Length: 305
Image (cartoon, rainbow, N blue to C red):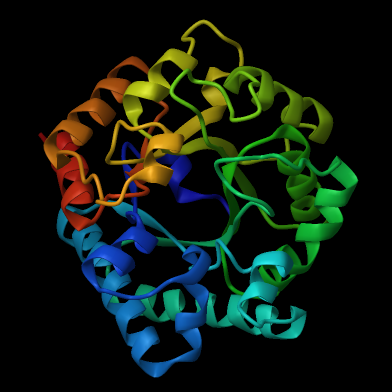
């Protein structure tokens, strides 16, 4: 499949689903895990309403949208904390794709379905880093489950280190499914492990023959992404998207915050548009923690204007 977001002037994503569920819908999400909602009829209805809202924005504005499955925490370690074994996790992966297939059938917008893969450990604090082979073996079960569905690709979000990103890429190549690698950055524009964004991208590309379809950055404000982007760097064209936090706070500050910092939707949209003006290949744009449909509407409006 040729990914349509690679030839579009703008392709949206949804926003921060976990923060929306917790702070707007009052849902208790232990470990920030949204996937157990798939096993409850009311939970599925809530998720459907969430995704319908974003697909509706894309349909109204005549743009495409990438929707991520609610499986960021559906890996063996986090799944076990919620009482899910590998068999139940595979069923969750399939159910998450099925839910988005239903959304896609009901809207005229181009909806790309991404099987979401999250980090094995904490997305902010990578105290433990697997080897490349350990990461391949660890994530292969979930990626294989997605490969057996009608998902269009898999996306590894909030990646903190190179070996895990490389292992996930290996697993995706073995499963013959496209993969997007999305790193998270600290306020200095580096990965939480201290590696510069460009060095991380070059390392994964070098060790995997450039297999990732493209790279993204997520769970960070655009003003913290800008210092990491070098217009003269040979790797810059590989960065195609941003899922931005609403807040300008650091990861450490967000961890300690008791009130959700929603930022300003218009300001966030203007920051995304500014980055796009400097780096026109940044066309896959959406939200992460603290963002909701208002931020995505603002991003879409900033480009239509």
